[in-house]
Length: 492
Ligand code: AMP
Ligand code: MG
Image 1 (cartoon, helix red, strand yellow):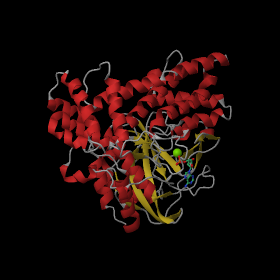
Image 2 (spheres, helix red, strand yellow):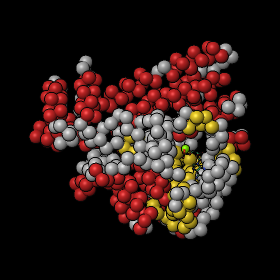
Image 3 (cartoon, rainbow, N blue to C red):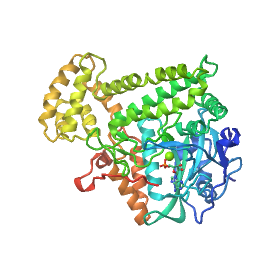
Image 4 (tube, rainbow, N blue to C red):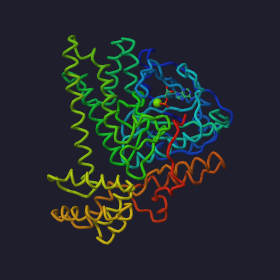
């Protein structure tokens, strides 16, 4: 039996300016590290066959499966504010698309599978550490309920990649509802190829926003829909303490999924100015700056779509501005609603926003752990004595006492029982997030000792982030001072 991929490719049927046809480069000795079996099933693939040596060869890019039409996609992008007219998949190859069990078209892409015409000076390869990081964090995001690309598999190649030192090489199989980015539109906009922009926009509407097919002004509506999805996505990031780290326009998905897990990380103690990326010296992509940057990226998309908005340039700009103008409101509605849920409010009242902001301010001042403060607040809602566990998150616990008094008065005005409120708070505040020191430890064990047991365990715990899992309670803990990871490298 050979592995069958039920490919139904659509992107490779677009004009050949959209991509370069290129096969993955064979590697020495592929070995499967991890297969995401439930995801394989969801994609209509046989997980048992993928776990055979032949499966590993496919997932490492050594064998191209029947029906694949391997391409590297063309795109441009603003990186840290600087425009680069040609980026493209420099180390990723799209094998093709399948229709999953829910009828959703999904890309299957190998990342780290060798050079492409877009590699510029890169080697087209990925190191094991960043591959494991993307696997852990993307799957954790999925389990947390946040739109994201997925990880189908990780393989080691049996070859070394040269970074600062020689590191084991690896390939990640990434699954996305598509890999079309803001930067894909920019690629054609900078070439003044309006036909291509229209083709791309039509493809995107059919694929991601089918409700807009036949709309009176489909391209205006497309911009509006992408704005709405990005606003919602960034609100979710903030609510869960996620810092993307490289919100370049080439890392901004048109479908509204989180994509490109480089120097991303979850916050431990709450600090709105927190930055993780070692190359983000200006704090451009700091935690609290993410909504502003998302809007900046969407403005770049709007510029690309202007030629589709009509003849009159000035009018088109006005229309684009109006559509972009909806972002702050969509974002804050989603963010504020999420915050109210985080503190267990079932209703909306004047003063809620200020109440919650006061908690966040106290958390920032007292280096309170973002995840545990909210999680333990659930316990405190269930049983007043458990307020002690929330207090313990604050350097000065009395900072919580004052706030807790106001909060208890506020929740007393709602009819829900203590148990109901506790369940509601726990349903939106995870016990387990991919804490950076845990991710680093998993990578160290794998890279230094070829030991994947910590990786397996972390992936398992993070698959149920909202459950208590007492046997793994230690995974809830923030890092000790000497375990703290201050910077993550743009892990390429
Ligand atoms: P990223 O920072 O991962 O979003 O990548 C930015 C750009 O650099 C994309 O065009 C990537 O394909 C390209 N790139 C990153 N790493 C490599 C590599 N090792 N070889 C070739 N291209 C790369
Ligand atoms: Mg990228």
